[in-house]
Length: 174
Image 1 (cartoon, rainbow, N blue to C red):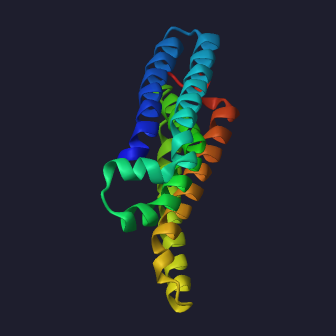
Image 2: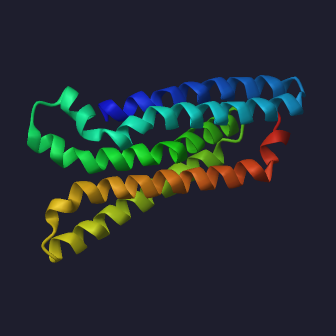
């Protein structure tokens, strides 16, 4: 998570900026500018988080080796870090679209996305843990968790993108 935070923290920053800009533009009845700010926020979040995730996918062992002095931990954490890196573009979309919707005053859909994503994540992890344990693969538990996180973050990205594209957020009273 310490390594992953270098990728996702800028996305939250762009989300906060996009939220403020969209709220301001909608309040001023500048709908085209609000949409432009939302698009720019998403593009900057996706671009920044994707670039920051490239080393997580390409040289995960080296990154882990910089912060951990244990070959076992580096070996165990390599594939989860790769999966976390691959999740960053979807995570960026989820963060930025959710923030823009909140800035527009449409807070219910981001909440629904988070709740359903977390329920789905926990259910998938529990299911995979039962399956892995019954089949003698309990050691794959950490990998299962990160696969479920990847699925959850991309689910949220798709969910938020659908809500965003529906366009009702543009007509909320701010």
